[in-house]
Structure formats: C-alpha cells, structure tokens
Length: 225
Image (cartoon, rainbow, N blue to C red; front, side):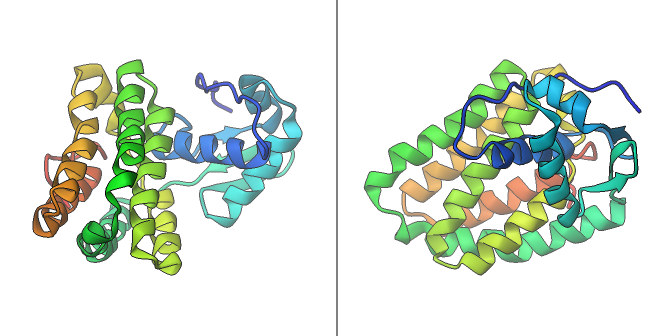
C-alpha cells in the first residue's frame, strides 16, 4: 500500500458518509489517491479524523461507481482509466453539456447569480489554497448545480457519472506552475456569458472547458479532446 496523501479533515455534517464519499471521489479524480494503489479504510479514517466505518461505507459506494475495487483484507484499489476511456468520456460530455448549458441560459433567474458566483469562487479559492481535492469537489458542485437548471434529472445523473469517471492528473502540474488559478477563473467567464444571456457564448465556453478537462487538466496537450 502507498502512503496516504494529505486529505482534508471532515467537519460535522448531517451525513458523514456522503461527505467522505464526495471527498474520496474528488481525491481519486484529482489523482491525490493514485490509480492502481490500495488504500485501507482505517488509514484513510485517520486522515479524515473519523473511524474506519464511514470510510469503508463510502468506499463501498464508490465500488458501485467503478472508482475503486475491494481488495480482501487490504482495502480498496483505485481503478485505472485508459486514455481511450478518457477520450470516450470527453466525447460524450461534449455531446451533452454544452447544449444543456446553452438551453439553461434563459432559465436561470437573475436572483440566483450571486449564489452561482459563490460556487464559482469556491473553485478559485480552492486553487489559491492549493487544495486539489477541494477544487475538484467545488467544480463538481458548480457544474451539477448549473445543469440542474435544465430541469432534467436524468441528464444531471448521467453527467455526474461521467465526471466521476474522469481523471484530472494534470491538475498537480497546473498548481505547481501557478496556472490553476487561471483555469479556475473559467467558471466566472462561463457565468459572464450566462448572465449576459448569451447562449452561443456560453455553449462555446463550455465546449472549451471540457476540452481543457481532457487536455490540459488531464495532463495532455492544450485543447485536446
């Protein structure tokens, strides 16, 4: 088993299992929990400041999502995703998300923008702290909240699953180079188009954003899809 990375402590929440699951999912997507490595629930629990039980329960949830595989008497192994798989995931997201954002532009009430701005700022703040797990989790919340305005829960569930299977191993080099903050700012740029009621601009921005997910943020070339 590999040494466990520094993970954020878990504060009091109504559903501890859900909170830990979200943090673990973000750690896997960002690469803080490494593909192919086995992690034990007791060790992760120590990092979170909780017992092994909610961590084990959260990991079992992630087994159903295909993010980890149980290893008897050892823990859970983080699944590996091929480049072909990542290409396919990005291709499906490009078919769904830009159009969904375009169609949601006129559905978002003006009074909701301060809340959406706060969610976008959470991503920027995480980047400034160098918190990759927090970055991925905040990004997840922002985009699913935005897609919620499509009033299509099936679409939101599908995108949530696609995002969970994505890997963003290029975030660490971005953080080290100081470029993660500029990438985080894209979320405010997307909101600028939406708040200006520019569906075409919002769609194009979302297309560019997903291109970064598969390219720059995944550790590949700028703009690859």
